[in-house]
Amino acid sequence: MELGRVFVEVNPLLFNGLWITVEVTFLSLLLAFILGLCSCFMGLSDKAPLQWISKMYVWLIRGTPLLVQVFYVYFAIPQLFQFLGFDLRFTPFSAGVITLTLNAGAYMSEIFRGAINAVNPGQMEAARSLGLSKWQAMRRVVLPQALRICLPSLVNQFIITLKDSSLISVIGLADIMYQAKIYVGRSMESFATYTWVALFYLVLIAVLTKLANTVERRTQI
Amino acid sequence: MTAQIKIKNLHKSFDSLDVLKGINLEINKGQVVCVIGASGSGKSTFLRCINRLEEPTGGEITVDDIVITNPGVDMNKVRRHIGMVFQQFNLFPHLTAKQNIMMAPLELKLYTKKEIEQKAIELMERVGLSDKLDALPRQLSGGQQQRVAIARALAMEPDIMLFDEPTSALDPEMVGEVLSVMKELAAMGMTMVVVTHEMGFARDVADRVIFMDEGIIMEEAPPTEMFTAPKNPRTIEFLNKVLSVK
Figure 1 (tube, rainbow over the protein chains, first blue to last red):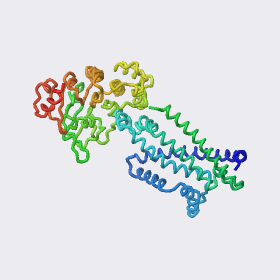
Figure 2 (figure 1 turned 135 degrees about the vertical axis):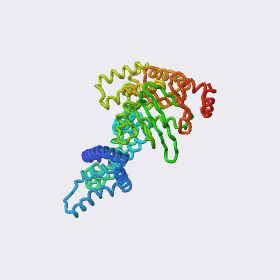
Figure 3 (figure 1 turned 30 degrees about the vertical axis):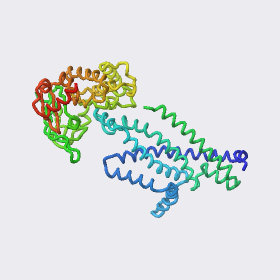
Figure 4 (figure 1 turned 60 degrees about the vertical axis):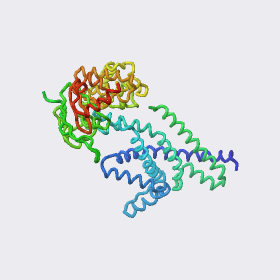
């Protein structure tokens, strides 16, 4: 139970892990943002098959736990491919990015949908009345306002995904949580180690929140 | 002279509710037509059918010799020539007044950026807001917002302007500034269809006044006739109600 000594020892390990955590989270969020937008537009389109794909995707992801999704991507899908005669294997890193992208993408799809619906329909009408196509009106008028509206929910999702990334350690991704478990297994210093891990996450999320607040203030309409 | 807007047997229903039950109307170039009537009479729906913000369920609308109710018509192109002003202004809140005016012409690449900017400055001057070019909508009063909205519509150089109760959401002291911009437009020969509760404006500016009730045109007359000697009992009842208040 020596916080100071443990910190000095575990610090380099945690920093290594922290870098992986940030990398996985950032990459996943970036891809999830694009995937979420695509799924959202499919959901809002007037073509039934596209709507159905979007609905199904959100339904599947929201209806299953993240841990199951991680195992599914890392273990189940490669086995399926093997059965079909393909050799497809993921590294823990790519499996982590795929899972977190699919997971956060579904929630972001719903966040975007809600925000677009929250923009006054008069905005779309005004843009259309000027001769803009539906897509032009969406891009120049509705989307900028929707993104502003959903910023708080989006930041919330960023934070959730950052924390969820700790689950990827179960398939062997050497993130901050993985490093901590290894160290605890060696030293038995659970209390000190996990206290530091918690603090690392706290600081990371505090920085993220601060950043988000600044963006929110700057983009006020 | 052929009419610029021709409306034949226009019908519109929402599910089982029939809002428009056969409207027939012709409007010539440069005419100002005011549409009056109680709320729920279908006058806004009628106006919104003219640029197909509302999809007609029956009938035919012709604008500048194009039958816009035909399925293959490129409405985006047609709408460039039909400006619209809304009751709630609907300015884009994330853009400044100038950007609001420039957005559509820029996006549609109608002119060079320089020309469009010049045009925006001229239009803002025309509506008396030269000093508000860089103001955001929330920094403007209702009357100022509506004048920017008119300028925004004019930036597309429309030859028809539709007004959907343009002064109904304004504080009384701001009604005048918007109406005077509209009067100026009318004097310059713009074809205008104005849904309004401003009977004074209808009397002074309109070439024809249309009274709508229950989804049809009950009475149509020049303003002097409409306001001094209405014939239809429903018109008389309506005008008695709105004019006696004043």
